[in-house]
Length: 606
Image (cartoon, rainbow, N blue to C red; front, side):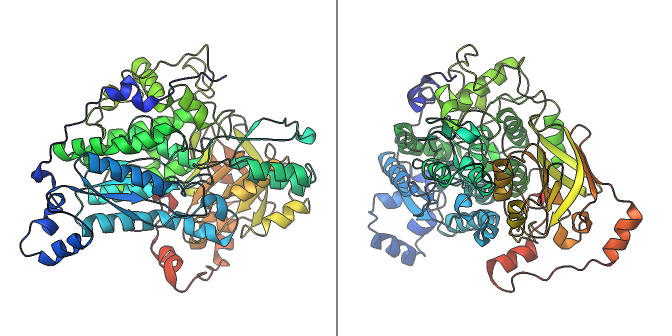
């Protein structure tokens, strides 16, 4: 059950106690923009600012770049321009000059299973490049980014866009100017409008974008009718906002808040709640704090802050993409972070949140019981898992931010479990190694899938060939499905395998089949799944040498992933292996495949 919670968390005492500075129009806050407005040798730059309508008074004020990752045709991002307008208005009221700009975005939800998915992960680095470029080149004094998805952390109304958020964080770490990030917000849960007797689903039940993907497998295997599938597809995304479960976008928005780079409650306020508009209006007050304190991203994003973020990823049951993105963000900030840090934290951190895709609730439900601040307050008070002394964009510490957050009531809600009744006693993000993944692989193990798997391999060298095999019944219970040549270089772009995982779940095979890939997974994916296998197939990693029928063994307890093939046989196969030709000879994907590093390092390109 879900409690009613605070109606307006941004107006709660937890936020009101953060005293924003007065609207002092201090000329010394325009540390960078004065190059354009006060340098006598830069008359041309000043003339062009006058041409935009800027006044003499505004020439003396700090200039704040507002990075809204807005574009039409995608519910996760379509509303971001309006949020950017609110931020600009807040800047005006606070004595700052807000200058809006956009960057690119890719809808993960819309590009799943088609060639567009190859552009998703590359868009993360392109977003980082674009924001770094304009904030630095235009001499902005600070930046307020508005993403909606995991890559842009970024922003998406109904399809996931987790790439945007890490892109914004990577840019902030690079230009290192005062920065605050506003998450575009989560989508509300969809609702079934008809019963689905064959799957025991009832009218009125909550659904998400993950259900839309899983409906294909159920439909393709005859488990649901055309009408039952249409009902899910039409009603899983009811409006603006990022995917509603604890998928990648909401995982990365939580990372933002725990890292200290967004305001309290930003990660859980739904996109269409009035509080999201209020957050945007209030952002400039905190930007002034950052300017006056000269508080920069690298002052906030410390190694301990990253460890806090990893811990919270375990607590909430977050996406495997968090591993990839946190490694890349930390590198941009010159913070040492490896997959070994995830192992150490997983060993001592429980899963407490019962959130989709593996659980029952969505982010809106978590918001109603107090959001991430209530969880942080509980953990800081009861454990040593979270270091509350870390600085945040409010100008106060993480612990100070949540002192007055509402307490979790474990008798009135079960979205978040108490420490003595965890969903899983240790972290669900499991780093595997073995002869199939000498460097590493990443698995999401909630316990519902079991802790080990052994079965014969069924190999596919691309995603499209998987679907006919499923429809023809060639994928049997007990098989280990291997999808390869889908890594950062091979994909290229390390596409997400939400289509295959959703199809397997819908076909009723999710509990009896294992899926392994050198690609990655959407946060909506569930089942016994292992991704990020490195080295990847395209550079001759062992996953390229697996053949149909080879026995695959995965043990989540010992963290091992093994192809039961002797070394001599693998060596012989390697002699006959040839690297595939590059899929692209020009353009962004060619450059990406040429420059990108392995998934075990965060798949960065700079």
